Length: 198
Length: 284
Image (tube, rainbow over all chains, first blue to last red; front, side, top):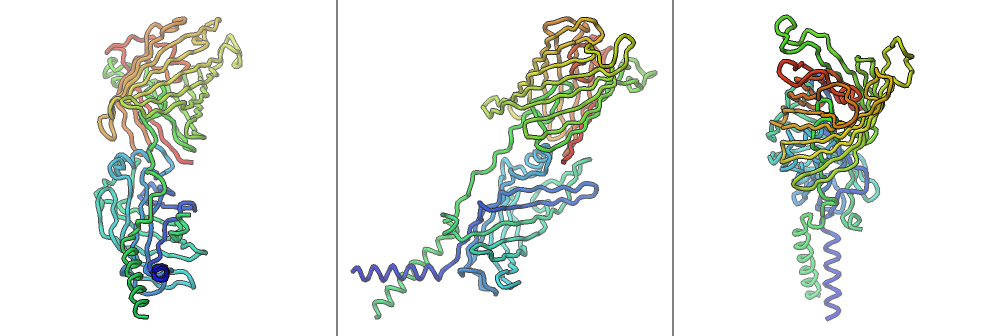
Protein backbone atom coordinates (compact mmCIF):
# COMPACT_ATOMS: atom_id res chain seq x y z
CA UNK A 1 0.00 0.00 0.00
CA UNK A 2 2.75 2.39 1.00
CA UNK A 3 4.52 1.52 -2.26
CA UNK A 4 1.42 2.49 -4.22
CA UNK A 5 1.21 5.82 -2.38
CA UNK A 6 4.85 6.47 -3.16
CA UNK A 7 4.28 5.63 -6.81
CA UNK A 8 1.24 7.94 -6.97
CA UNK A 9 3.18 10.71 -5.26
CA UNK A 10 6.06 10.27 -7.71
CA UNK A 11 3.58 10.35 -10.58
CA UNK A 12 2.02 13.57 -9.37
CA UNK A 13 5.40 15.21 -8.87
CA UNK A 14 6.73 14.18 -12.25
CA UNK A 15 3.50 15.08 -14.03
CA UNK A 16 3.41 18.48 -12.33
CA UNK A 17 7.04 19.06 -13.26
CA UNK A 18 6.21 18.43 -16.89
CA UNK A 19 3.07 20.63 -16.79
CA UNK A 20 2.46 24.31 -17.19
CA UNK A 21 4.81 26.97 -15.85
CA UNK A 22 2.93 29.55 -13.85
CA UNK A 23 4.44 32.99 -13.42
CA UNK A 24 3.20 35.90 -11.38
CA UNK A 25 4.05 39.58 -11.69
CA UNK A 26 6.92 40.21 -9.31
CA UNK A 27 5.40 42.88 -7.10
CA UNK A 28 8.62 43.29 -5.15
CA UNK A 29 10.54 44.39 -8.25
CA UNK A 30 10.32 47.64 -10.21
CA UNK A 31 7.14 47.78 -12.29
CA UNK A 32 6.02 50.48 -14.65
CA UNK A 33 2.98 51.14 -16.78
CA UNK A 34 2.97 54.40 -18.69
CA UNK A 35 0.16 55.94 -20.73
CA UNK A 36 1.51 58.51 -23.17
CA UNK A 37 -0.78 61.12 -24.65
CA UNK A 38 0.75 63.02 -27.55
CA UNK A 39 -1.84 65.65 -28.47
CA UNK A 40 -1.11 68.86 -30.37
CA UNK A 41 0.14 71.56 -27.99
CA UNK A 42 0.10 69.33 -24.93
CA UNK A 43 1.93 66.10 -24.26
CA UNK A 44 1.70 64.35 -20.98
CA UNK A 45 1.99 60.89 -19.55
CA UNK A 46 0.54 59.00 -16.65
CA UNK A 47 2.53 56.37 -14.84
CA UNK A 48 1.91 53.78 -12.18
CA UNK A 49 3.75 50.82 -10.74
CA UNK A 50 0.50 49.08 -9.88
CA UNK A 51 0.42 46.26 -12.43
CA UNK A 52 -0.32 42.76 -11.23
CA UNK A 53 -1.36 39.43 -12.72
CA UNK A 54 -0.08 36.11 -13.96
CA UNK A 55 0.87 34.09 -17.02
CA UNK A 56 0.66 30.34 -17.49
CA UNK A 57 2.60 28.71 -20.29
CA UNK A 58 2.47 25.05 -21.34
CA UNK A 59 6.21 24.67 -20.76
CA UNK A 60 8.52 25.31 -17.87
CA UNK A 61 10.12 28.14 -19.79
CA UNK A 62 9.35 29.94 -23.02
CA UNK A 63 10.08 28.14 -26.27
CA UNK A 64 9.93 29.36 -29.85
CA UNK A 65 6.89 28.29 -31.79
CA UNK A 66 3.14 28.33 -31.70
CA UNK A 67 2.33 25.58 -29.20
CA UNK A 68 0.74 27.96 -26.76
CA UNK A 69 -2.91 27.03 -27.17
CA UNK A 70 -3.23 26.17 -23.49
CA UNK A 71 -1.40 29.30 -22.34
CA UNK A 72 -3.18 31.95 -20.37
CA UNK A 73 -2.42 35.39 -19.01
CA UNK A 74 -4.19 38.05 -17.00
CA UNK A 75 -2.77 41.46 -16.19
CA UNK A 76 -4.49 44.35 -14.46
CA UNK A 77 -3.49 47.95 -13.87
CA UNK A 78 -4.83 49.91 -10.91
CA UNK A 79 -6.06 53.08 -12.59
CA UNK A 80 -6.59 54.94 -9.32
CA UNK A 81 -2.81 54.88 -8.93
CA UNK A 82 -2.20 56.61 -12.26
CA UNK A 83 -0.12 59.75 -11.74
CA UNK A 84 0.15 62.43 -14.41
CA UNK A 85 2.24 64.67 -12.17
CA UNK A 86 -0.60 67.10 -11.45
CA UNK A 87 -3.15 66.17 -8.82
CA UNK A 88 -5.97 68.06 -10.47
CA UNK A 89 -5.37 66.30 -13.78
CA UNK A 90 -5.22 62.95 -11.97
CA UNK A 91 -8.61 63.65 -10.46
CA UNK A 92 -10.06 64.66 -13.81
CA UNK A 93 -8.68 61.49 -15.38
CA UNK A 94 -10.12 59.34 -12.61
CA UNK A 95 -13.49 60.99 -12.19
CA UNK A 96 -14.37 62.48 -15.54
CA UNK A 97 -12.87 60.12 -18.08
CA UNK A 98 -11.82 56.73 -16.69
CA UNK A 99 -14.57 56.73 -14.02
CA UNK A 100 -12.42 54.65 -11.73
CA UNK A 101 -15.05 54.63 -8.99
CA UNK A 102 -16.95 52.16 -11.18
CA UNK A 103 -14.06 50.73 -13.19
CA UNK A 104 -10.93 50.74 -11.05
CA UNK A 105 -8.85 48.39 -13.22
CA UNK A 106 -7.70 48.13 -16.81
CA UNK A 107 -7.47 44.41 -17.58
CA UNK A 108 -5.87 42.43 -20.36
CA UNK A 109 -6.56 38.69 -20.48
CA UNK A 110 -5.91 36.10 -23.16
CA UNK A 111 -3.22 33.75 -24.38
CA UNK A 112 0.11 33.73 -26.15
CA UNK A 113 -0.26 33.27 -29.92
CA UNK A 114 3.36 32.62 -30.78
CA UNK A 115 6.90 33.13 -29.63
CA UNK A 116 9.87 34.10 -31.79
CA UNK A 117 13.34 33.72 -30.37
CA UNK A 118 15.11 37.08 -30.23
CA UNK A 119 18.23 35.91 -28.45
CA UNK A 120 19.27 32.90 -26.39
CA UNK A 121 16.69 33.48 -23.73
CA UNK A 122 14.65 36.38 -25.06
CA UNK A 123 11.46 35.99 -27.03
CA UNK A 124 9.18 38.25 -28.99
CA UNK A 125 5.70 37.18 -27.95
CA UNK A 126 2.44 37.95 -29.66
CA UNK A 127 -0.29 38.00 -27.07
CA UNK A 128 -3.97 38.26 -27.88
CA UNK A 129 -7.20 38.38 -25.97
CA UNK A 130 -9.57 40.95 -24.56
CA UNK A 131 -8.72 44.28 -23.04
CA UNK A 132 -11.22 45.81 -20.64
CA UNK A 133 -11.06 49.50 -19.79
CA UNK A 134 -13.88 51.70 -18.53
CA UNK A 135 -16.07 48.60 -18.39
CA UNK A 136 -15.77 48.01 -22.14
CA UNK A 137 -14.09 44.88 -23.47
CA UNK A 138 -12.41 44.95 -26.87
CA UNK A 139 -10.31 42.35 -28.69
CA UNK A 140 -6.64 43.22 -28.44
CA UNK A 141 -3.32 41.85 -29.56
CA UNK A 142 0.12 43.18 -28.72
CA UNK A 143 3.77 42.36 -29.20
CA UNK A 144 5.96 42.14 -26.13
CA UNK A 145 9.50 41.12 -25.37
CA UNK A 146 10.17 38.61 -22.59
CA UNK A 147 13.82 38.14 -21.64
CA UNK A 148 14.91 35.60 -19.06
CA UNK A 149 16.93 37.05 -16.20
CA UNK A 150 17.74 34.36 -13.66
CA UNK A 151 14.48 32.65 -12.82
CA UNK A 152 12.41 35.65 -13.89
CA UNK A 153 11.25 37.06 -17.21
CA UNK A 154 11.71 40.78 -17.83
CA UNK A 155 8.65 41.82 -19.84
CA UNK A 156 8.55 44.99 -21.92
CA UNK A 157 6.15 46.19 -24.54
CA UNK A 158 4.29 49.06 -26.08
CA UNK A 159 0.96 49.15 -27.88
CA UNK A 160 -1.68 51.73 -28.77
CA UNK A 161 -5.07 52.02 -27.10
CA UNK A 162 -7.80 54.00 -28.86
CA UNK A 163 -9.82 55.66 -26.09
CA UNK A 164 -13.08 56.04 -28.07
CA UNK A 165 -13.13 52.22 -28.51
CA UNK A 166 -13.61 52.00 -24.76
CA UNK A 167 -16.28 54.70 -24.64
CA UNK A 168 -13.89 57.08 -22.91
CA UNK A 169 -14.78 60.65 -23.71
CA UNK A 170 -11.72 62.40 -25.06
CA UNK A 171 -11.57 65.90 -23.56
CA UNK A 172 -11.26 68.67 -26.11
CA UNK A 173 -11.40 71.51 -23.59
CA UNK A 174 -8.92 74.30 -23.88
CA UNK A 175 -5.79 73.39 -21.90
CA UNK A 176 -6.89 69.79 -21.43
CA UNK A 177 -6.17 67.90 -24.58
CA UNK A 178 -5.70 64.17 -24.79
CA UNK A 179 -4.96 62.33 -27.99
CA UNK A 180 -7.61 59.86 -29.17
CA UNK A 181 -5.01 57.11 -29.10
CA UNK A 182 -2.61 56.76 -26.18
CA UNK A 183 0.50 54.62 -26.22
CA UNK A 184 0.78 52.16 -23.36
CA UNK A 185 4.24 51.08 -22.23
CA UNK A 186 4.76 48.08 -19.95
CA UNK A 187 7.87 47.12 -18.03
CA UNK A 188 7.72 44.49 -15.30
CA UNK A 189 9.04 41.09 -14.20
CA UNK A 190 7.36 37.71 -14.09
CA UNK A 191 8.46 35.40 -11.33
CA UNK A 192 7.80 31.62 -11.10
CA UNK A 193 4.65 31.20 -9.02
CA UNK A 194 6.42 29.02 -6.47
CA UNK A 195 8.97 31.78 -5.83
CA UNK A 196 6.25 34.47 -5.80
CA UNK A 197 4.50 32.66 -2.96
CA UNK A 198 7.66 32.52 -0.85
CA UNK B 1 4.47 -3.24 -14.40
CA UNK B 2 1.01 -2.69 -15.89
CA UNK B 3 -0.15 -1.62 -12.44
CA UNK B 4 2.66 0.91 -12.24
CA UNK B 5 1.79 2.37 -15.66
CA UNK B 6 -1.89 2.65 -14.72
CA UNK B 7 -1.07 4.36 -11.42
CA UNK B 8 1.36 6.76 -13.11
CA UNK B 9 -1.13 7.55 -15.84
CA UNK B 10 -3.80 8.16 -13.22
CA UNK B 11 -1.43 10.40 -11.29
CA UNK B 12 -0.49 12.33 -14.42
CA UNK B 13 -4.19 12.72 -15.23
CA UNK B 14 -4.84 14.03 -11.72
CA UNK B 15 -1.93 16.45 -12.00
CA UNK B 16 -3.06 17.52 -15.43
CA UNK B 17 -6.57 18.03 -14.13
CA UNK B 18 -5.24 20.01 -11.19
CA UNK B 19 -3.17 22.09 -13.56
CA UNK B 20 -6.14 22.75 -15.84
CA UNK B 21 -8.14 24.02 -12.91
CA UNK B 22 -5.22 26.12 -11.78
CA UNK B 23 -5.98 28.94 -14.20
CA UNK B 24 -4.18 31.46 -12.11
CA UNK B 25 -5.89 30.25 -8.97
CA UNK B 26 -2.51 30.52 -7.33
CA UNK B 27 -2.45 34.23 -8.05
CA UNK B 28 -3.86 36.77 -5.67
CA UNK B 29 -3.84 40.53 -6.01
CA UNK B 30 -0.75 41.65 -4.10
CA UNK B 31 -2.36 44.70 -2.55
CA UNK B 32 -5.87 46.13 -2.35
CA UNK B 33 -7.00 48.68 -4.96
CA UNK B 34 -5.60 52.16 -4.46
CA UNK B 35 -7.86 54.62 -2.72
CA UNK B 36 -7.73 58.03 -4.44
CA UNK B 37 -6.73 60.95 -2.24
CA UNK B 38 -9.57 62.70 -0.42
CA UNK B 39 -10.50 65.88 -2.25
CA UNK B 40 -13.29 68.15 -1.06
CA UNK B 41 -12.75 71.49 -2.76
CA UNK B 42 -11.06 71.22 -6.13
CA UNK B 43 -8.96 74.37 -5.89
CA UNK B 44 -6.44 75.55 -3.28
CA UNK B 45 -8.49 78.69 -2.67
CA UNK B 46 -12.12 79.71 -2.77
CA UNK B 47 -12.14 83.30 -4.05
CA UNK B 48 -9.77 84.95 -1.61
CA UNK B 49 -10.09 82.51 1.29
CA UNK B 50 -7.91 79.40 1.30
CA UNK B 51 -9.24 75.85 1.16
CA UNK B 52 -7.49 72.92 2.84
CA UNK B 53 -6.41 71.56 -0.55
CA UNK B 54 -2.77 71.42 -1.54
CA UNK B 55 -1.15 70.92 -4.93
CA UNK B 56 0.51 67.53 -4.80
CA UNK B 57 4.23 66.94 -4.53
CA UNK B 58 6.51 68.95 -6.82
CA UNK B 59 3.72 70.90 -8.49
CA UNK B 60 3.94 74.63 -9.21
CA UNK B 61 0.93 76.91 -9.37
CA UNK B 62 1.02 80.25 -11.11
CA UNK B 63 -1.74 82.70 -10.25
CA UNK B 64 -2.94 86.00 -11.62
CA UNK B 65 -5.89 87.86 -10.11
CA UNK B 66 -7.57 91.18 -10.83
CA UNK B 67 -10.15 93.28 -8.98
CA UNK B 68 -11.48 96.21 -10.96
CA UNK B 69 -12.13 99.53 -9.21
CA UNK B 70 -15.12 100.67 -11.31
CA UNK B 71 -18.45 99.13 -10.39
CA UNK B 72 -20.80 97.23 -12.67
CA UNK B 73 -23.26 100.03 -11.86
CA UNK B 74 -20.94 102.67 -13.34
CA UNK B 75 -22.45 101.63 -16.61
CA UNK B 76 -21.49 102.19 -20.20
CA UNK B 77 -18.98 105.00 -19.53
CA UNK B 78 -16.80 102.55 -17.61
CA UNK B 79 -17.67 99.56 -19.75
CA UNK B 80 -19.75 98.21 -16.86
CA UNK B 81 -16.74 97.97 -14.60
CA UNK B 82 -14.22 96.54 -17.06
CA UNK B 83 -12.39 99.78 -17.84
CA UNK B 84 -10.10 99.64 -14.86
CA UNK B 85 -7.97 100.61 -13.11
CA UNK B 86 -7.60 97.35 -11.26
CA UNK B 87 -5.68 95.86 -8.41
CA UNK B 88 -3.78 92.76 -9.35
CA UNK B 89 -1.97 89.92 -7.65
CA UNK B 90 0.70 87.68 -9.12
CA UNK B 91 1.60 84.54 -7.24
CA UNK B 92 3.69 81.41 -7.51
CA UNK B 93 3.04 78.43 -5.27
CA UNK B 94 5.06 75.27 -4.87
CA UNK B 95 4.34 72.03 -3.04
CA UNK B 96 7.52 70.29 -1.88
CA UNK B 97 5.34 67.59 -0.29
CA UNK B 98 1.77 66.40 -0.68
CA UNK B 99 0.68 68.37 2.36
CA UNK B 100 2.63 71.62 2.15
CA UNK B 101 2.26 74.59 -0.20
CA UNK B 102 4.55 77.61 -0.09
CA UNK B 103 3.34 80.66 -2.00
CA UNK B 104 5.01 83.94 -2.81
CA UNK B 105 2.64 86.58 -4.14
CA UNK B 106 2.56 90.31 -4.69
CA UNK B 107 -0.36 92.67 -4.84
CA UNK B 108 0.16 96.07 -6.41
CA UNK B 109 -1.86 97.67 -3.61
CA UNK B 110 0.88 98.99 -1.33
CA UNK B 111 3.37 96.72 -3.05
CA UNK B 112 2.24 94.02 -0.64
CA UNK B 113 4.62 91.06 -0.91
CA UNK B 114 3.18 88.01 0.79
CA UNK B 115 5.02 84.83 1.73
CA UNK B 116 2.82 82.09 3.15
CA UNK B 117 2.82 78.41 3.93
CA UNK B 118 -0.17 76.11 4.12
CA UNK B 119 0.04 72.71 5.73
CA UNK B 120 -2.67 70.08 5.55
CA UNK B 121 -3.15 68.67 9.05
CA UNK B 122 -6.02 66.24 8.77
CA UNK B 123 -7.90 64.07 6.28
CA UNK B 124 -10.92 62.16 7.51
CA UNK B 125 -13.02 60.05 5.18
CA UNK B 126 -15.77 60.01 7.76
CA UNK B 127 -19.36 59.74 6.61
CA UNK B 128 -21.63 61.52 6.10
CA UNK B 129 -19.28 64.49 6.46
CA UNK B 130 -15.68 63.96 5.37
CA UNK B 131 -13.27 66.46 6.87
CA UNK B 132 -10.03 68.16 5.96
CA UNK B 133 -8.17 70.64 8.10
CA UNK B 134 -5.16 72.80 7.38
CA UNK B 135 -3.32 75.77 8.80
CA UNK B 136 -2.03 78.67 6.78
CA UNK B 137 0.39 81.28 8.10
CA UNK B 138 2.20 84.06 6.39
CA UNK B 139 3.87 87.40 6.52
CA UNK B 140 3.42 90.45 4.33
CA UNK B 141 5.75 93.34 3.60
CA UNK B 142 4.24 96.51 2.24
CA UNK B 143 7.07 97.68 0.05
CA UNK B 144 5.60 100.83 -1.40
CA UNK B 145 7.70 103.83 -0.40
CA UNK B 146 5.99 106.22 2.00
CA UNK B 147 7.01 109.71 2.99
CA UNK B 148 6.92 109.14 6.76
CA UNK B 149 8.86 105.91 7.02
CA UNK B 150 11.54 103.76 5.50
CA UNK B 151 10.60 100.75 3.42
CA UNK B 152 11.93 98.47 6.11
CA UNK B 153 9.99 100.14 8.94
CA UNK B 154 8.38 97.54 11.18
CA UNK B 155 4.97 99.15 10.64
CA UNK B 156 5.14 97.94 7.05
CA UNK B 157 5.12 94.31 8.11
CA UNK B 158 2.05 92.22 8.84
CA UNK B 159 1.52 88.60 9.75
CA UNK B 160 -1.46 86.30 9.95
CA UNK B 161 -2.53 82.78 10.73
CA UNK B 162 -5.62 80.99 9.46
CA UNK B 163 -7.20 77.72 10.48
CA UNK B 164 -9.04 75.95 7.66
CA UNK B 165 -11.77 73.36 8.09
CA UNK B 166 -13.50 71.91 5.04
CA UNK B 167 -16.28 69.41 4.60
CA UNK B 168 -18.55 68.16 1.85
CA UNK B 169 -22.26 67.41 1.80
CA UNK B 170 -22.97 64.72 -0.74
CA UNK B 171 -20.83 64.97 -3.84
CA UNK B 172 -21.61 68.50 -4.92
CA UNK B 173 -21.63 70.91 -1.99
CA UNK B 174 -18.35 71.84 -0.27
CA UNK B 175 -18.19 74.13 2.74
CA UNK B 176 -15.31 75.84 4.52
CA UNK B 177 -14.67 77.83 7.69
CA UNK B 178 -11.52 79.92 8.02
CA UNK B 179 -10.95 81.56 11.41
CA UNK B 180 -8.21 84.13 10.85
CA UNK B 181 -5.99 86.30 13.03
CA UNK B 182 -4.20 89.30 11.52
CA UNK B 183 -1.49 91.30 13.27
CA UNK B 184 -0.95 94.93 12.25
CA UNK B 185 -4.19 95.05 10.32
CA UNK B 186 -3.78 98.67 9.29
CA UNK B 187 -0.30 99.53 8.08
CA UNK B 188 -1.14 103.22 7.85
CA UNK B 189 -1.69 103.76 11.58
CA UNK B 190 1.00 104.34 14.16
CA UNK B 191 -0.27 101.66 16.50
CA UNK B 192 -0.21 98.05 15.46
CA UNK B 193 -3.73 96.69 15.69
CA UNK B 194 -4.93 93.10 15.61
CA UNK B 195 -8.13 91.63 14.34
CA UNK B 196 -9.92 88.33 14.25
CA UNK B 197 -12.19 87.36 11.37
CA UNK B 198 -14.04 84.21 10.44
CA UNK B 199 -14.19 83.47 6.75
CA UNK B 200 -17.04 81.32 5.48
CA UNK B 201 -17.23 79.91 1.99
CA UNK B 202 -19.13 77.38 -0.04
CA UNK B 203 -19.13 75.89 -3.48
CA UNK B 204 -21.71 73.94 -5.45
CA UNK B 205 -20.26 71.75 -8.18
CA UNK B 206 -22.78 71.77 -11.02
CA UNK B 207 -20.87 69.41 -13.30
CA UNK B 208 -17.32 68.31 -14.10
CA UNK B 209 -16.30 71.79 -15.24
CA UNK B 210 -18.54 74.42 -13.68
CA UNK B 211 -19.30 75.38 -10.10
CA UNK B 212 -20.88 78.26 -8.21
CA UNK B 213 -18.77 79.77 -5.47
CA UNK B 214 -19.35 82.29 -2.66
CA UNK B 215 -17.49 83.59 0.38
CA UNK B 216 -17.99 86.05 3.24
CA UNK B 217 -15.36 87.24 5.70
CA UNK B 218 -16.87 88.97 8.72
CA UNK B 219 -14.53 90.56 11.24
CA UNK B 220 -15.61 89.42 14.69
CA UNK B 221 -13.22 91.24 17.04
CA UNK B 222 -10.35 93.66 17.06
CA UNK B 223 -10.03 97.16 15.74
CA UNK B 224 -12.18 97.86 12.75
CA UNK B 225 -10.09 98.93 9.80
CA UNK B 226 -12.82 99.28 7.22
CA UNK B 227 -16.50 99.33 7.92
CA UNK B 228 -17.80 96.60 5.71
CA UNK B 229 -17.37 92.88 5.36
CA UNK B 230 -15.94 91.46 2.15
CA UNK B 231 -18.32 89.19 0.27
CA UNK B 232 -17.92 87.70 -3.18
CA UNK B 233 -19.70 85.24 -5.42
CA UNK B 234 -19.15 83.89 -8.88
CA UNK B 235 -18.41 80.98 -11.16
CA UNK B 236 -15.46 78.63 -11.27
CA UNK B 237 -14.41 76.74 -14.38
CA UNK B 238 -11.82 74.02 -14.14
CA UNK B 239 -9.86 72.20 -16.80
CA UNK B 240 -6.94 69.79 -16.66
CA UNK B 241 -4.48 72.30 -15.24
CA UNK B 242 -6.37 75.57 -14.85
CA UNK B 243 -8.96 77.25 -12.71
CA UNK B 244 -10.83 80.29 -13.94
CA UNK B 245 -12.86 82.18 -11.34
CA UNK B 246 -15.09 85.04 -12.43
CA UNK B 247 -16.52 86.93 -9.46
CA UNK B 248 -18.61 89.86 -8.32
CA UNK B 249 -17.34 91.41 -5.08
CA UNK B 250 -17.52 94.44 -2.82
CA UNK B 251 -13.78 94.21 -2.05
CA UNK B 252 -10.89 95.01 -4.34
CA UNK B 253 -8.24 93.62 -1.99
CA UNK B 254 -6.39 90.46 -2.85
CA UNK B 255 -3.64 89.47 -0.43
CA UNK B 256 -4.67 87.93 2.92
CA UNK B 257 -3.30 90.78 5.06
CA UNK B 258 -5.47 93.12 2.99
CA UNK B 259 -8.79 91.36 2.41
CA UNK B 260 -9.01 90.27 6.07
CA UNK B 261 -9.10 93.94 7.10
CA UNK B 262 -12.48 94.49 5.45
CA UNK B 263 -13.69 96.77 2.70
CA UNK B 264 -14.97 100.31 2.38
CA UNK B 265 -17.88 99.18 0.20
CA UNK B 266 -21.23 97.91 1.38
CA UNK B 267 -22.38 94.59 -0.11
CA UNK B 268 -25.13 95.58 -2.52
CA UNK B 269 -25.85 95.69 -6.21
CA UNK B 270 -24.52 99.25 -6.63
CA UNK B 271 -21.13 98.43 -5.11
CA UNK B 272 -20.30 95.19 -6.83
CA UNK B 273 -17.16 95.01 -8.91
CA UNK B 274 -15.78 92.48 -11.31
CA UNK B 275 -12.80 90.32 -10.49
CA UNK B 276 -11.13 87.23 -11.81
CA UNK B 277 -8.53 84.70 -10.84
CA UNK B 278 -6.67 82.34 -13.13
CA UNK B 279 -4.37 79.60 -11.90
CA UNK B 280 -2.21 77.29 -13.95
CA UNK B 281 -0.67 74.13 -12.53
CA UNK B 282 2.76 73.17 -13.77
CA UNK B 283 4.57 69.89 -13.27
CA UNK B 284 8.19 70.30 -12.25
